[in-house]
Image (spheres, rainbow, N blue to C red):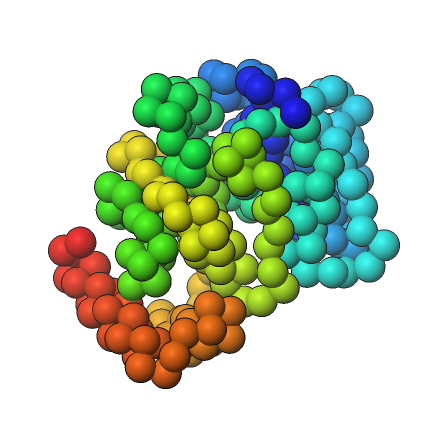
Length: 253
C-alpha cells in the first residue's frame, strides 16, 4: 500500500458519451499522485475501448473489463481489490471533479487525522457549467446520524484504507449508502465534511415524485434487510429521514 497514493474507483457501463470528460477531470487535478482503476462492466458500446486508450497514454490509468455484466457494486469491488493506494476515492464515469478536489480533501484528512471524509457538490443535467444548487452537508455523522438521512455523495467520499482495510460494497440498491453505514457501524468512527464545492453529479431525468417514493421504499429496505433494525427502530429512523427531506426541500438543513 502506497501512503501518498489515492486510488480512484470508476465503474463504467455504456458510458462512451461521458467517460472522457470524467477522466479529463482527473487529469487536471492539482494533486497528481493518483491511480485510476476503470472497470468496464461488459458495455455494449465503446466505453472499454475509450478507457483502454487513456490507459495506454497515461500510466496512472488502468482499464479492466468484466466478462459479463455484474452490476456497479461488483465493478467497484474489483477495482478496490487491485487498488494500491492508502486512500480510496470514487468517481462514476458520468460525473466530474473540480481541479482542487483531491488536493484539498487529502490535506483536510491529513491535517485533522480523519479517516472518512466527504465534500459538498452540485448536480447538473446536461451542462456541468450550469450546475444546480449546492448540496450542503452536515459537519460530521456517525452511524446513527447517517441512518436519519444520507447526504454523503459517493463521488465525494475519500477513505483511509489503514482504518478500513476490508471495504466491500454489497449487491443491494443504495450500495454506497449501505457501505458507509457498515463502515461507521463496525468502526465506531465518524465521517467528516469538507465544506467546499468540489464535484459535479450528473442527475437523471426521473420523475421527482416517483424518485422520492422509491427512495423511501429503498431506505426502509436498508433498515430492515441490511442493518437488521427492528420494525420500531426502522420507523423511527424513516420518520427522521422523511422530515429531514422536507426541511431540505424548503431550504433548511
